[in-house]
Length: 471
Image 1: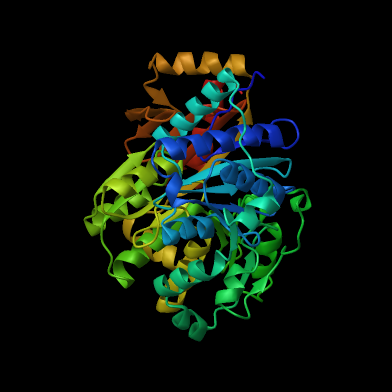
Image 2: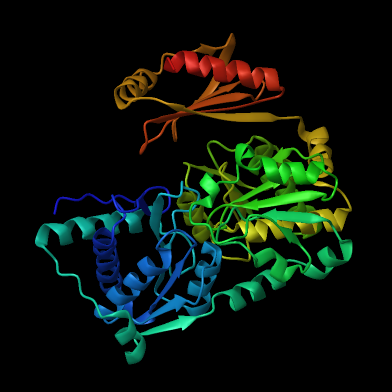
């Protein structure tokens, strides 16, 4: 069987029944068990979780069967759960690893296989490379899939079923002042986007309103990604005056989106900015800060204000995770809504971030927009937009070749003051505004990102980026 399985920014994903099949899942699961044996982690066991996508529970049971066939004790979540809850269970049980069956924010026809390492965070780049190599070697050698039927694995004690919710709820209760939030009585509505975060925030904050909680593996035709265009109903509810804030979670609840008190989308850049200030000023925490190349300059300016070391990585939380393991990191985050904090696990956690936003509001008595405006009045006002544009692979290759020649000295009548080609092609201008041209490594998509001091400048830079790319 000729098959190449590649792990992307977080795990292996594919279209169900075309790429993500039981046979291909079995190949990846067998390679994972082989890897755990080679690393001396098999004896610590494996925690397996799953989201609400089509066949996720059945795919998770298949992973358990292959773990048992390889003599590895596994614990299967007793119901759907957010990825951070699965990750916390890996940490709490001191397991060798975790496997989460989820395609996160991808459209409903996808599913995926995320590996969580023993520290309770995303598999690091070296780990995913090793897994890809084991998969390829196993395919090449015709490695047999070793399995034990699910019910037999349960009966033998090689597999068990656990509640991953209780320990996770305990951790959230310790990290966030839930009593302060309850007393503040903030009218909040949560949109879990039919995903695995449904019911979690109301469990901790009884009376919290939720929408889109039904079991709907098709996500009502909307990819469960908490971006502005997908949160119109949430925004309308806040604009109606019934709620002061809206929180949104992606399909496996490791990413956060929000709507502020004006009913406007509150991007991850704004969330990062508000929470970083809250952690420093209200919670008295310190440490380094990690951002990806596509993340707002407001984080840089706040780090300067508070005297915090700043690190920058390529896009993908696995890079942030590595730095969180190696350094004293207070907070790390990326443009897509994945944010993690000190004193937890080195993992994105949309539910914890949502609770921290409510804590920031409760502690200050202010709305998210008020908190942001206070900060921007100090450090400067910033506007941001991203464009995702279709581009065929030939045009993408030509664009990359042209940009690598590094001949651009001015864009939109602005002289380029600095260049950053860490991940894509980022051009920074004297006033701090910037344009990032980033061809996707996995899809026929070109992403353009820009930030500037006013919305018109953002649009000018994005239009110039389209001109450079010819799209």
